[in-house]
Each structure stands twice: as structure tokens, then as C-alpha cells.
Length: 387
Ligand SMILES: C[S@@+](CC[C@H](N)C(=O)[O-])C[C@H]1O[C@@H](n2cnc3c(N)ncnc32)[C@H](O)[C@@H]1O
Image (cartoon, rainbow, N blue to C red):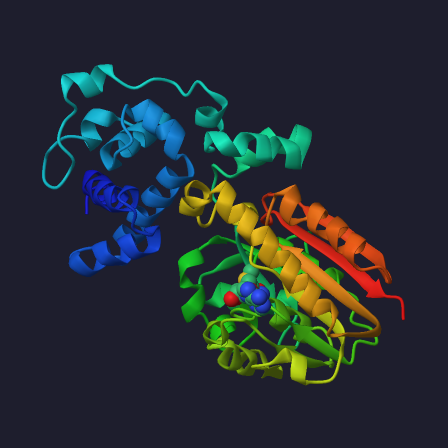
């Protein structure tokens, strides 16, 4: 596909997303009908779509319309690319600009336009992040790094770097977590690489890795991941210690891939339908459902989909999860609460409300990871039961 044809494809996908379809589904739908598109074409269209969604408001200003075409025109203007060559109407490229389009569009003006946030969310960013609110919002306009976690049960970081290189993947160690690697080149080949197939690496964001590395597993004989989902967190913990690991999720089908992932990683994780039935645990991790705002570089359509009502609902669910999970912690045991949210209501406020509801716990850790070159926004809070 030509560069113009890729833009035309992105316009179609963006129109479907603007009409309410999830980005991933719209991209899959397009790819199914575009047998002519090679893997590089599909990757390029995907990049266009995701970048346009990260910067939806500002691109719509620059392009003069909140349409797929407006967004891609805004993207091309933002990148100072040659509009006439890309919107040429030739082959499968989008039609040339109309006179209105050529004269239209404006620089983003309001804070919401400039920071690519819905207006209602500006105060939430300010309250949650203070002086760092703008920096965080601007960081969400860029691409997330591609991060791997080395499975220390299978290989060292240096060994994995060499093995990835054999498959043409260039990885470098980064400081955020002891087993973290950042991939700069060949990122799309990970799933077919020997290192991945043989369980030496998992895809995992740097901040999630750092948070799991910060948990104290010494003396934790029984560890429960109460909101295990696909199991990324419990696998990171199981790589570090020989405790007995258990996984639970309110939607058990989300754990469907976990047994295969654990087998690949050479660790044992027991899936539980009912976490309440078993004996108490020395560590219960609640990686709670949240707005995901710290990860919106990866799922930018969610930035525009979140509502104040949904955020309120999420905070109620988080409080309920903490209340249930604390009852599963053994005397002197730990309760860890984690989110990939930037918002105070889902993080510190949740911790403070828990302490007000539940005397008898001692806080041992409270930490935020900002959105950066090595990881997403993340929050971790740990308390220990006094007796
Ligand atoms: C942030 S995701 C977990 C991600 C996972 N820990 C990982 O690292 O891949 C949150 C999970 O919590 C689950 N969940 C939602 N409500 C829950 C509840 N009341 N109790 C337990 N799990 C719940 C969701 O099904 C979802 O899989």
C-alpha cells in the first residue's frame, strides 16, 4: 500500500471508531477485508489510528472536523508532512483537499484541545496530579514503550538480550525494574521469538514490573492474586519466589490463558473459583479494575469513553474488592492494592478510606510511578495486618 492508501484505510477505521466501535475491533474488521495489506501495511494503519485517537481533539482542530478524514488531515498537518502528496486522490489515496478543507482547521486553543482531554476531566487531572497534570496529559499523547520482563527462572537479562538478538530483536536493559528490557527495534516479532516461546520473557509494562518487584515476598508462604485477569502480575511474583501462588478473578474466563502462560514460564499457579473457601493468605494482591488512565497511550479510545459516572462506579467496586480481600489476609499478612490509574479517587483516596473503615492495619508502602519512557502510570499501596 502507498502512504496515501494507508491514510485512507486509517480514515475508514477512525470513522468506525467515531461511530462507537472499539478501536481493536474496527482494525480487525478492516484487516479482514483487506487481504492485499501486508503486515507492514497493517502495522502502519494501526499506528495511524492509535496516534489519531491519542490526539483526537487537537487533530480534529488542526484538520477542521471530528471525522476520520479530519483527524488524519490534522495528523498530517501536525507532522508537517506533504498534504498534497498524501491526499492526492491517486490510486487508493484520499481525495484532494476541498477549498474549505485547505482554508480550514485551527490550532488547538482551549486546555482540553491542547492537552487532548475531555473538558470534564481537566479538573480531575489537576486535583490528582497538581503541577504534573499537564506533563501527564501531554505524555498520554505519545506512544508507550514496548517492555519485556525477563523470567529469571529461565534466563538472565544478558542471556535474553543475546537470544532476542538472534531473532533480530534489539532489547536494552532499563532501570525501572530489575528484569525489565525495552525493545527499540523489531517490536512486532516478539510472539514468534525463541525467547518468548520458551518462556524467557513476557510482555509486561515497566511500572507493573517495578510494582511487583517492590512487594516483599519473604515469609509469604501463600500468595493470592485476587484480580488475576490474564495473570501478568501473579506470573511476575511467581518468578521471584517459591511460595504457593493462587489466582482468582470475578470473571474466571479472563484467566483462561493463565495455565499455559504459567507452564511456559515454568511456575505453578493454582486457579481458584472461590478464594474465600481456602485458608488465609500471607499476601493478597488486588490489581483492581480501574479507569486505566495510566495506560491510555496503549488504549487511547478509553480516554474518550470514560465518564464521571463510570469513574464513580469503579471507585465503589475498588472499595468493595478491598473490603472482601482484607478478610482473606492472615494475621501479620499483607494486603497490596494496585491500579494503573492516575486519579487520586482510585489511588490515595481509596487507601485512606480503607484505613478509616479498617483499623488494625499498618501502611508499609505507598508509591506512584509516573507515565514515562520505561512505563505507564501506576499506583501501589501495601498494608500489613497488625494481628
Ligand atoms: C486490572 S485487571 C487485572 C489485570 C491482571 N492482574 C494482570 O496483571 O494481567 C482487573 C481484573 O479484576 C477483575 N475483577 C473485577 N471485579 C472484581 C471483583 N469484584 N473481584 C475480583 N476480581 C474482579 C476483572 O475481571 C479484571 O480481570
